[in-house]
Image (tube, rainbow, N blue to C red; front, side, top):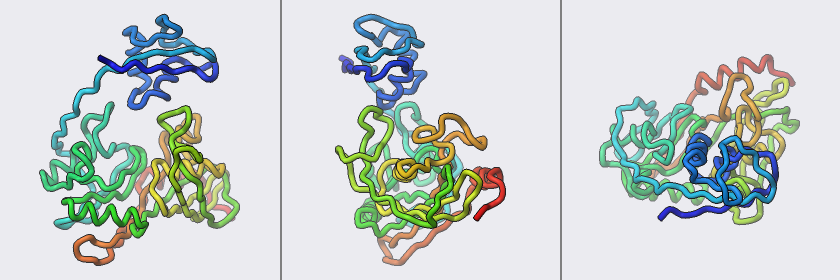
Length: 306
């Protein structure tokens, strides 16, 4: 039997399909519309249309169909491999690629591509749906990601994530002009109290989060920034930069209400990795060029200013 979920509307004005998409994990707006049209959503005990605008105090009841198991299948998808040996693969992930299968993204992911390339050699520690995945980056974030080919490598790399010896450096474009040349955001991050798809700086049910940033270049209304993660919380750079008043360009979730500079999705690239090879103990330093979309954004910002 499907689980019945109940929500009480806290403010008036939101469309019912948008509200469900914001608060039901794994449900897109189009999926919410199908549930409404199927009569699977009740507001104050009755059915509504998908464009119904909610009022404060409305009680919404809905049920989600039981999720079908996602079958992992190898897919011949081109990957930009920048480092590989018998233990570790480092991929330069393109913007728009999802890391592992999930509801709404059953295939076409990095994991599907890795399975085609590596077969059954990927580590199983990350779970059945995330073979080899040591850490993740968001769909619209491009750049370097480490994959473990075996459990030995996975344990070693995970330990480096925990003790913060694995260095990850990102570049991004944020809105507004940062006055200082560098700084640190030390603010705990947890799930947003009302929007399950978002994270937030909060003291409730949160974990420590530290981001070090420095200015690369300033433009009229924007700043090109380098960020080094000391911790690795979900959406950390996006949340922290928005928290200090400088959300990432193109980030609809934490900043932009509409596309800017032709960009939909955050302008964020994982540019540099430093880690200790889990088997040899040697230091590995990998750096990648900025992708074309990022260069195009910088060219649209005009001349640098002091």
